[in-house]
Amino acid sequence: MSDLVITPIVCGAYQANAYLLYRSGRPDALLIDPGDDYPALARAIAGSGKRLTDILLTHGHFDHFLCAARLRQEFGARIHIHESDAYLLASREDSAWSAQVCTEPFTPARPDETYPENGEIDVCGVHFKVLHTPGHTQGGVCLLDEADGALFSGDTVFAQGYGRYDLAGGSLHQLLGSLRLILSLDRSLRVYPGHGESAALAQIARYFGK
Image 1 (cartoon, rainbow, N blue to C red):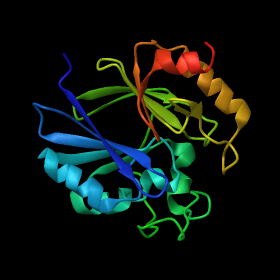
Image 2 (image 1 turned 60 degrees about the vertical axis):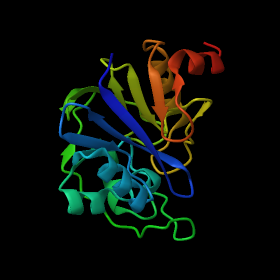
Image 3 (image 1 turned 180 degrees about the horizontal axis):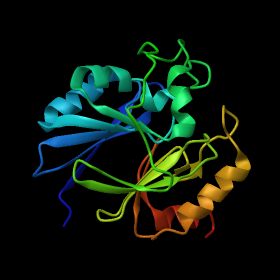
């Protein structure tokens, strides 16, 4: 039985999912995609009783990173992103930030580390395979935790659908290739997307007729 605790935190007008992860027997925690709701994120961290050490970004759109810089300042957490999306963290326009929908100001974020290309990382006792899945953005990734049966898919794939490809760095051709990669994985995986409910990969595959 897994000792990994996964806490979803829904952020902002676009209802983007952040995920707080920690192992029950460790003092540290990581956040995936901390978006546009600092109070909710801070409450979740405080409630966990853990120390936030790392922020893992699946891609560089504002609704998935807007609070990263403040969390880095407050907690000293390291920010990780694919190098092809690092420029988005400093661009209001390319990250799709909008004063009309955002409650948090745009604060440029600086990554501390970039992911190894289709490599592996160990953070807070969790071993991730970093799958480069471009199409929604050039540097989009999915974070695969095989030991706990979890895939954090950002906006590459949802329970019923996939991310848009008409923003900066988007490509339908690349997105379709990324979807094929995801659908080739173990169907027992639980997929935790950037928006909406989680779902078994087998359920997602049925949606795509696979």
